[in-house]
Length: 373
Image (cartoon, rainbow, N blue to C red; front, side, top):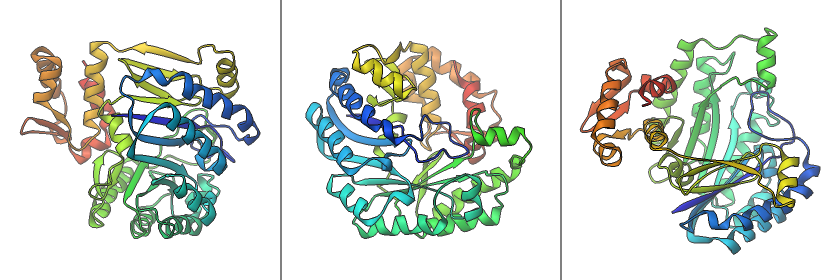
């Protein structure tokens, strides 16, 4: 199997925390569409396995697209790739874009999985994050999606937000999990450079949340989601049984995929490719049939470290026996030796699996770096 990702680089406005590539200028859609369609066509030979099982519209804000543009993009993909009849077709959307007519049109196009960026169900937090919608808008968008026949709905939430109390977070979790959703993605707020929030922090307009409170909120996430039978399968992802994101799960399993659009990444033929993160340059280079992406060939060491990183993000963890089959006994012994330097409260080694504990998941980045070979 393989997957396709389409990066839609448009937003009505930039959220204060976001460092994904996007622009608040929808007028450039007229330049973007022909470039994207050409990229889809000219890179069709990159995948050795043309059996596409997942298509994912991300961004930016895909719901900034007109329905006719989505239809054109999907038709181009279906023209140049072999798409499985039951392919998972995911579409990220903002609540304020999802009116009934738009939802019905998406469903008629074959979109069968929605990822709705709620981020919070507390209006104070939404204003702090500079989201355009209200809590009521967010709730209505999920309910309307369900009414329109979507039965695979994911909600996005953010915790670890400055001024977010444990009570506020618990209330958001309960309200969200009572909605007709099958999947939850919950991310700890990261304050990245080149964002408004980073500048506000430097100007002492707020203080970062206490790490102990952050961990408490993470534990609340694990506990409360499980009471609604939405269980963790990856650090930031939770689902009802059978509703794990096939597209994202393919990333963690290192399955080939192509990424189209400015800033999109790809993985194929033992290479990683990175599209230029500049819409104007992306369109210009494609129009001139010049390279619009860079590639790097992965070494054996790259594969080993990716296997460690991606496996430990999941609740399944690293299968030591499979690791040894893939990379040999010498590398396996190095991994086991590195594990001895990790605090034992952060991981479990049982039945040939290495899995991070809840505490380990919360500080996974630092642990994974220590295990890199």
